Length: 401
Image (cartoon, rainbow, N blue to C red):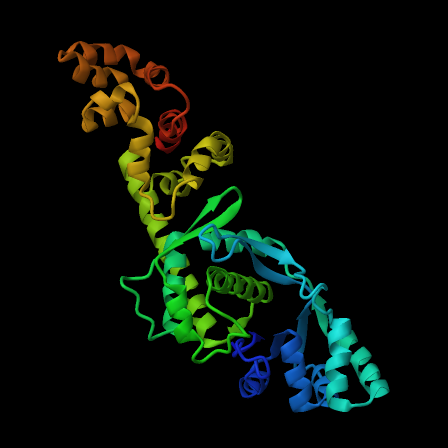
């Protein structure tokens, strides 16, 4: 308890005072290790408030650890406001007025000089400071993870609604705001009914337009920041201090992850009950020692296509419905009642034939073709379908040897 904490700006919209210095001191007092992630504005505030000498001493005495990130994670946008707006999550350097953002080697001496007024002293203290802080690049993997977060329709919709409530609580659209992101030609595009002109009229009552304006990219950047914050804290196994807006989004993200796992567990249980009449069939086969490592390796080797099929589903998808649609649609089984189709897929081609032939011939044949069920189904339903994995591999795995 109270082992490690990561502190980020609590007032990111304030260019002169992004940090809550009282909260920072509180963290240093109660936690064994306090790490502060800083940018140029944060460094200037620290040097101005606590002096360059005091800041260096804080770090040298290990009361505070500082990480300066030399690159940026940002939303690259094209054709903004044109109706054809598109975005991409990027990790790297963004050019401002013809040059890259200033590195720590440039920022620290400048921030110290502003408070000390003496070049030589500022340069010497800056050298000491640069030797005792961590200068890091943001992991490029953040871009891929943040993109996946943005494409999660339920999470993004809730996140954008939370941002509107935080930034423009008095904004009222004609209907409940929606914000859905999809991919097009490796770019992200958004569908939304949010009136950004109206929202900005409210937003700029409290935030200087020179600092920021509400836009699609601005809303998406908060989801990116949440991903970056969570990943950074997870790597250090630390708690997080950040501004109220991002704290709410982090809580929202954690809740979505928990709810997603709950839905996934129910989905898996429901599918196993549907496919093999046992919600915990795979677990029981392992835990009851019916299957060993050789069986597991064999099953997983055959599961690649099945797992790829699952990976393409939307988070809110129902496996049973998708399975039924994939196995039945555009095949001979379209003409077969649902119950009969299920028997055909799971129990045996012979029983299914009864439904087609309206006689007992199918059942009689079924006695002889039980071993050929999978072969028959494969021929009747062209191409790979998920029931092939179920019939060939999963069912035999969960049945007692």
